[in-house]
Length: 127
Length: 116
Length: 254
Ligand code: SF4
Ligand code: FES
Image 1 (cartoon, rainbow over the protein chains, first blue to last red):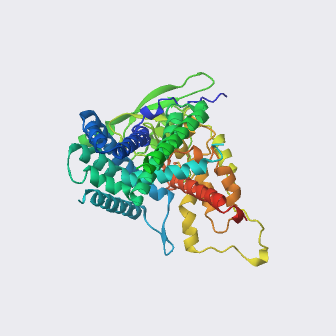
Image 2 (cartoon, rainbow over the protein chains, first blue to last red):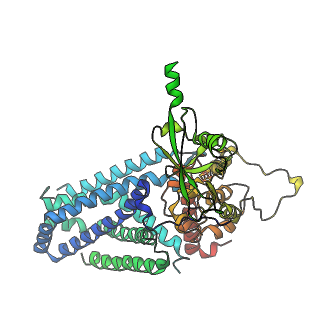
């Protein structure tokens, strides 16, 4: 008897909500990397002197660039949330022979995230 | 070659994902939104930022998060291309192009940050 | 009396995937309208069809209590054990029932599972010893903590829901896949086992763990809380750290 096979179509990730959000999660890396390119350019303009730096900040202030950074921020937040949620899958922590529950690990990740963000913001913003 | 070195690329991906998860939101908020919008003018004044990035730790952190984010992107993007578009046959060229881009990004990041 | 009658008259529609290779080359969907009972699971509905409507419908089942793993099907596109999926969670909407995705269909709702069986054996799922201890040495002892390391990976009922949920398996049929990798990890993490290296040689390949991109659906659909996605991530980490150790301490190879 001939078995009937149902090959996966190239649009498989559009046919199912969770698959779609999986691809969104993967593609957040594009916006994050793009942001890192703009950050590098900012550092370059900074090295070129005060005028170049000011001009670049003006460019970053244009509506298109602000929109891009808002999108990048959304992508980065989505990345952080999904990353912290999945991290306990790879690393199982044990305290006195007992597995630390995933929720605890996730909570610890969030706490570390908050602390690092606050420290970075404090270092940059104190003047 | 890439098949054999898969653990290496995955380590870079995992490091990049962790670095970006912790640092990307706050960095985007600071340099992409707060600075151009003119919030905290003293903090983003030229002299102040200059002084900040002249510190070796700042440079190291910036270099690390930028470069690792590139490898994080390369890894995820190549899988998404190969699987999302079912480009299974183009698997190797896709991987080579993505990692080559990340390596090029690493070199330019090194140049920019060394010249700071 | 009246109320009871209206209850008895309630019906639900099942759209069932049919494929009879001797009479058709393409599958079709057949619609059955059957009585709706609040306490019925999808498997009860299929059994009702087979007993009272259409005896030619083919599907697998056995235990009716979520332990044998043979009744897996796609229910409205999601892989489910039909013996633990209640009609009341879908009623009054119609339910579409298909054979588990990503597998070839042998007939109606029954899939061909040879590939899965081969993959289970492929990962060497047994305790491997460099040298067996003589019988007089007694049994291999294990503490509860050591058991706890791998116990959840040993709960698999081989229902294949995770393979049906995995788009990577659909795209790359060579992928060893969630349940088989979880089974390999079950032995890798067993304190009595010494076959980790041998198994890693099979796992740390593209067809093994490196094809996985952590979609995570295998863990979501697993009815036995095996967490195959976790097993794969742990294997990736172990493989990556092993690689790092070999690069940094090349003389440390024992
Ligand atoms: S890992 Fe879970 S979903 Fe996969 S075959 Fe085993 S019990 Fe079923
Ligand atoms: S019939 Fe055994 S698991 Fe459903």
